[in-house]
Amino acid sequence: MNATVTDRPDDHPRVVRGLLNIAHALDHLFLLIFAAAVSSIAVDMGMAQWQDLMPYGAGAFFMFGLGSLPSGRLGDLWGRRSMMLVFFFGIGSAAILTAFAQTPWQLAASLTLLGLFASIYHPVGIPMLLERAANPGVTIGFNGLAGNLGVAVAALLTGFLIQAFGWRAAFVVPGLGALLCGWVFARSCPKEQSSPAKRQGGAKVSLPAPLLTRALVVMTAAAITSSVLFNFTTNGNGPLLAERFEGVMDDPAALGFLLAVVYAVASLAQLVVGHLINRFALKPFFLFMVVAQIPMLIMASQAQGWWLLLALTGVMVFIFGAIPFTDYMIARYVDDRLRSRVSGMRLGVSFAVSSLSVWALGPVVKALGFGSSLLLLAGFSVVTSLILMGLPNASHEQVKPA
Image 1 (cartoon, one colour):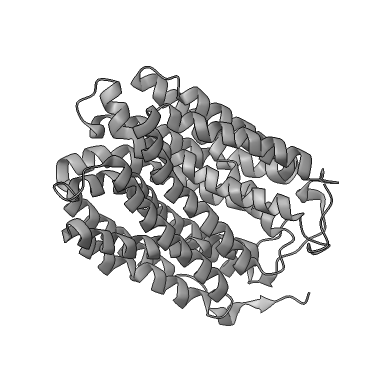
Image 2 (spheres, rainbow, N blue to C red):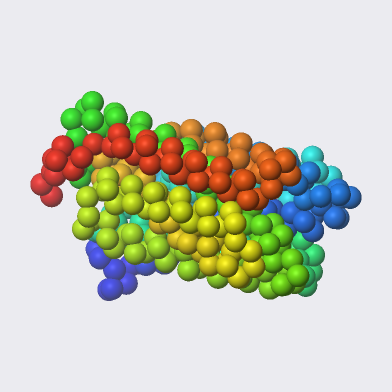
C-alpha cells in the first residue's frame, strides 16, 4: 500500500503508523487481561482467593522483560517489520491458547508464552515508529497515549466480556483482533530494503562517553523502580477498587468502567509530556513527574470510595507521565542502528526484575493490606528520585547538525 499525499515522503505510511500505535495498545491490553479477570478465573479454577492465583501470572511479565533482549537484537539485525509480524500473529495465538487453560499451571504456561510475544513490541515497534519521526517527543507522547489506552480498554473490555460471556472470551476476542491487525500490517507495510543495523545513522545529541554510560545506567536503574510501580499498580488497581468501593459499588463491569476512566485520563499525561519534553530541560522535568507520585500514593493509601478514585487518578497521571522519558532518551542519545538492542537491554533488565512485583502482589497485599502496600510504592518513588539525580545536566549535551 502506497503512502498517501498527506504522508511525509520520509515517514511510514499512515496505516503503518496507526498499526504500530494500535500494537502498543494491544501489548498492554494483553498483559493486563489476567489481572482484570483474576477474580473470575480463581473462582472457575476452584481457588479461594484471587491473591493465591496472582503469582501464576508473573511468568508473563518475566518473559516480557527477558524476551526483550533477543527481540531487540533480532529487530536490529533481522528487521523490524518481520519482528512486528511475529508480534501480531504470536500474541494473538497465545491469547487464544490461554482461553483453553484448565488448571493454574496451564494458565501460567500460556501466559508466559503470551509475555514472550509481548516482549517484542517495545524494543522493536517504538524504534520502528521513531526511525523516521520528525518530532520524537510528540511521536512518543502519542504512542504512550495509545499504549495506556490499551490499559484502560483492558479493564473495560475484560469486565464486559466476563459479565457477558465469561473470562475465556476476554482472551479470545482481542486475540482474534491481533491476528486481523497482523494481516493488515503484512499487506500495508513495505518490506525493508536492509536491516536497521546496516543503515547509515547517528544519534541526534551526543554526550561524552563517560556521561553517556552514566545516563544509560541511571536510565536503566530508574526504569527498574518505575516498572515496579507500573506493574504493581496496573495489576493491583482492579482489586484495590473492588475492596475500597465495597458497599458503594459492587458491579464488576461498573468498576471496570471506573478504572478505564482513570487510565484514560492518566494516558493524556503522556500526550502532554510528549509535547513539552522538548521545551524543558530533561532532568528537572523527569524529576518533577517522579516526585509528584509520592504525595499521590500517600493519599491513595488512606482514601476510600470516590476519594480513592480521585487519588488513584493522580497516582496514574504521574506514573504514566513519567514513561515517555526513557524512550525519549534512547531516541536522543542512541544511534538508530542500535536502538532496538539498547531498548531491549533496558527493558530486559527492568521488566525481568520488576516482574517480581507481579509475583509478590498477592502475597504482599494479603500480608500488609493495600494501605501499607501503597506506602511501600511511595518509597520506590523516593528511590527513583534519588537515582535520577545522577542524570547528566543539559549543559553537557552537544546537538549534532541535521
